[in-house]
Image (tube, rainbow over all chains, first blue to last red; front, side, top):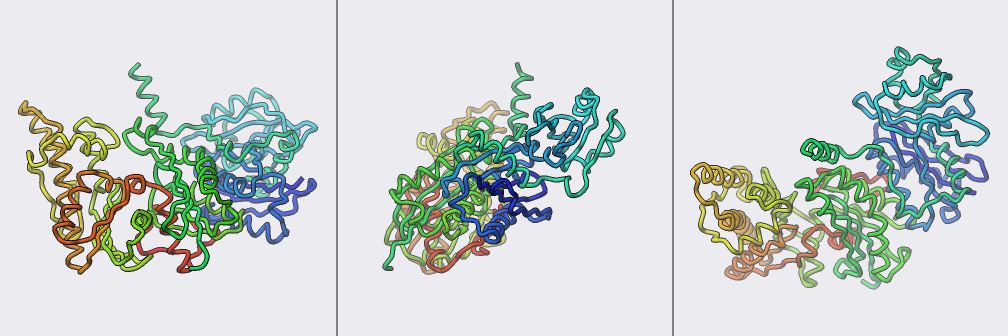
Length: 237
Length: 341
């Protein structure tokens, strides 16, 4: 199976190509340019370096959220455009689940956290078994960091953290979480499209692909204007 | 030209998701517009994050329909064009990211188009004989520009608004007199039942340039009028307020535009943008141009509101002059007219 994968859900822009179960190429950039300037040129470099024939790709995987609203839309719009012109199906992969592969096989709970600002995170938790995909023990949520730590304590296990929420909340976690913790090294701290490709293959083999027009980002948070409008309506009821 | 040039164009700078296929810059093969207006009406204006989310949900369906309606296949087209500014950055990024990826997948070049240039070029579709040079007034919810079109793809701004865009003033006044959003069509409709000369609102003079506009003073004058009338328990005739306000806007737009045409020695004048479908405005310009023996050009309303056909028209002239953008094309919210990359 040949899979092209993209992740632009956070600070990192990442592209990868997986063929016959091997990551043949993977480019990651963590730089201040916007993803709209970096993502497609990176994909083009990958295609040229690896002599990829885009028409032979089986499907295109994308980290579809949660994450930066704009970052998610750049990645999702890119795969939707590629999907339409190449007539390829898309495999949406949870950003958090892809991040969990940074600690693949860890003996404990893997907890990817992404900074959602205002003391909040996007987070989930996984426990690895025999499959490449971990068992989801906390489903993706947008919550206060304190609420997440309460849930994590309930497991009574070692917690492996990863994601861009780590530098923001590490001190808070160390001071407040009553559990053994492991934090990532630079090499497994961020999003990587290689992980998206691996999970993309897992889901594609199970037939869990979508038509390009059916793919949307998973934001886990409503737009501010919508939240304020609902609050007003609730207050007047 | 021997070979036809066919361009797929995409527009997503505000609250319309649009795609079109245009032949040789003048002929519409397809033109699809998905308007989000009902959604934003709930909020009294366009909410950028909500617009961005809607664009990404609809863009494939809109573009796919534009391709199938055109009766052509993407691989037989010559380029993919997309609006990359000015506009709301979130919505713009959806169109730009999508268009670049689509073009890349199909092996076609990408052409970034300036939204206002697109509005001006809507006139090339509506009037097959129109050629530069001419003066064009672009009036919409986000823009008020008086532009000298010296050649295809060559624009010089003569005047612009110093504060509110004309369409913005319509929206604000409509809210104040209880008409709601979007203000332009609603004010236009009830103005027909009012007396445009019943209330004397100011026609603003602006210091910087003889062609610049200002509408915030007029908006304040309307609000003051409403406040004073309600404090004095005077009856407010909404139709008269709307008609008098609209007349004040039209008077300024017409006088600046006619000055620009005559002082530049031009014989042709065009209007463009969402407010250009205002019937009062269209009638006033027809009369003013008729009296001065100036040829007047205006697109039909469907090409005045945001659409991708106009982007395809602008892109055609960019295409034949050799403009091609890279895969790093970015959305630029405040892209200036005539200062393209």
